[in-house]
Length: 397
Image (cartoon, rainbow, N blue to C red; front, side, top):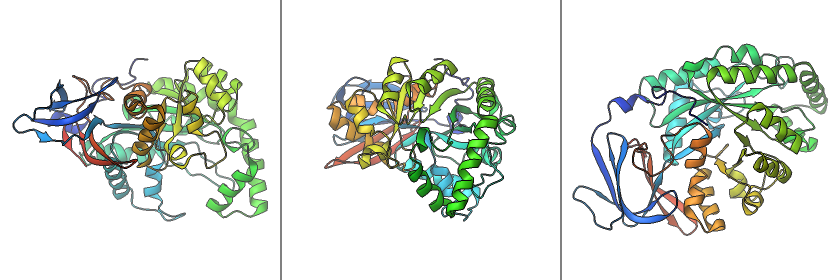
């Protein structure tokens, strides 16, 4: 798939001002297909040389045998929402939240992020969802233009098809907004992620403080919204994604029929399929499978869905997302490296593969001509320790 972005869209503010050369030497370089000892040189924000040699050139940083690998690419994270609302109904000023979110991601090795924002509001129940994406996106893009961010930010619009206001909210966005991904989401109770109604009840009542009667009303209302809007809003979201030039993702596919619909819609990758059957159907349809890093680190899904490790063992896993724990992304990659006995393959699941799935061709590998987004990593037992993060050759963590 061609990148949905033009070269200008891929240019962050500091692209235009970065100058100089850095060299990371005496490192184990994680290349796409092998790990070699050598050095990588970044000039004016771009990788310009890779040498397989143990020598340390004058002025180079001695990495003391640590791993050097591409910066992590995150396609779906709810982390920004956590900074905006650190506790239920506790709202934080947006600019400090944006800056803290950006700094946290840099500190965990993420150098490119598609910030997930929900579009589609529900007004008439206790579990109401207010429109916020357009205003927050404006603030995010303004902060980026002002040079406040350490890493590269794009938008991921999570389109709640069974809502009241999806299409009018999506109409407020355009190709200039760096909307890289649109995911089609249907959280109607009794299917997909929320097949287990008891798990849904625990999640919603804890988050929203609902009574049993409130929860019953919530379920009835969401099913009513699906009946009224589901088909129409899905078709409209597909048109809007095309207008933005965004990559399409499905969300919580559960059955082979769900996957067939995703394929017909032009979906490029599947976020968090909930069953092995769905993951197998994705593989058959050439749809990349993305699972959550917390699922890998914890050894299973918190909502009772398929284990990401089981998919990894069955060769049904392509991309990892940190989802709601940014530091889990690097941890999960090394867990997969141990499982597969293949470090380059595991690192590709958090670098090259998500970059490709997100339509970005200029990052995700240690290769000449790629962006100088690199990490220096060592291991403490089984735990990876990040010792440095560079975004386009600039030290950011």
